[in-house]
Image 1 (spheres, helix red, strand yellow):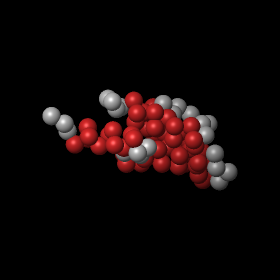
Image 2 (image 1 turned 90 degrees about the horizontal axis):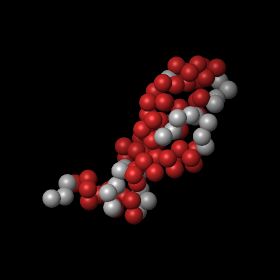
Image 3 (image 1 turned 135 degrees about the vertical axis):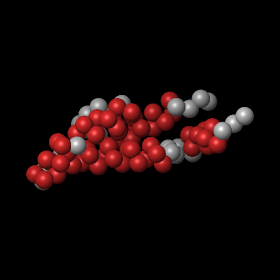
Length: 87
């Protein structure tokens, strides 16, 4: 018996579309990465205070440093999604 998510995941894969939960986490990582490299002292301080949150979310996808490019982060999120599929 197929569950709802089991028939949607392969369709998302073949359409090159990640689930919304992955997109939200990806955007969080990209936002934290952007404020981490900011020249604004307030944003810089905020990023240092929330660095642990970046690491917690990043560990899910293999993003362990904000030094990665945006494309590398997106690629790791995609790889995490494809690894969760059972095709």
